[in-house]
Structure formats: C-alpha cells, structure tokens
Length: 78
Image 1 (cartoon, rainbow, N blue to C red):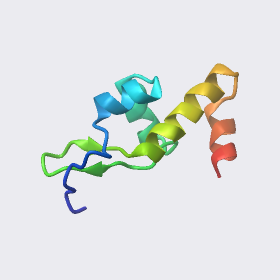
Image 2: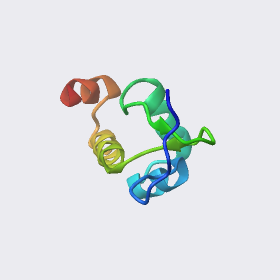
Image 3: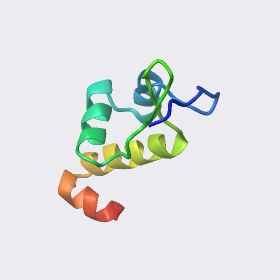
Image 4: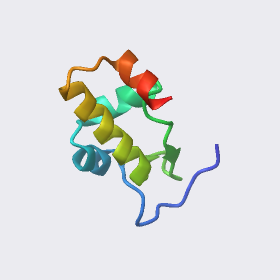
C-alpha cells in the first residue's frame, strides 16, 4: 500500500472518532471486522479517514443505538 499525503479532507483516527461519535477503539474494531473500509495510511503509518468513513461510522453507531446487531448492520450496508 502506497503512503498517502495528509490533506485537509482527511481525518486522523482521533478526529474520526470525535466526528463520528465513536471512540478510537471502536473505530479500529469496526475496521478490523470489515464494517468500515480499511483506511489509507500516511507516510508516518497513521490511519487517514475521509468523510465517507465518518458517515458510515455514524450510521453504524446510530443503528447500534436502535438495537441492530453488527451482523444486521453488515447486511444493511451491502
């Protein structure tokens, strides 16, 4: 994977967590289980998320609040 240059449209994992209302560990977990697409990496190997990652994480968080399981959410996202 080629490193990506950080742009103003990118979110580091901390900013992604704040913007989506999830915590950092949850963002990593959702990426690990495939609910979130794998983030690009910077030259310093930091995860770089974009607005579509934030929107998807918000959707997942809200769906969880409504009682959906992660498997149900995964089906909704297909």
